[in-house]
Length: 146
Image 1 (cartoon, one colour):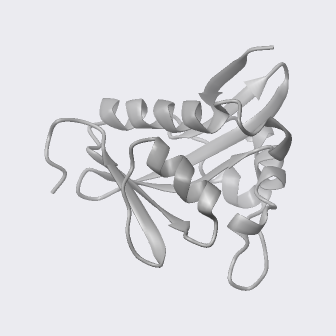
Image 2 (cartoon, rainbow, N blue to C red):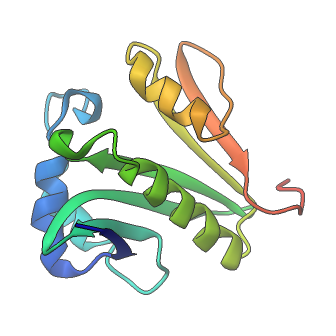
């Protein structure tokens, strides 16, 4: 079956919360982001995207625009059974294109170095980073971000 990337809808939020219950996304207090959080981001900016196979959401990316033509990837998660099939890369690529359409010139995120697969994924996507808690970023247009 093929995977489609599309803007998230309210009915996707419970599945996104479920996909977020992974060690990489646990909060400092040991909790996870719930459905109400995701519902706040369902809008028409096209920066909360899901990857759907058939009628099942297999992954999502949530990007938040910031001041200064910058966007921040709050979350990117893919169903563990669907990883390695390019879903994360498609979500990130679609988000980059949407950022460029909105005039956002720089996309960044944080990824824990204790998870080498995650760090390797973002490096493979052309992002660069440094530090013990790696902040990745990439230019999404030719215009300077700052």
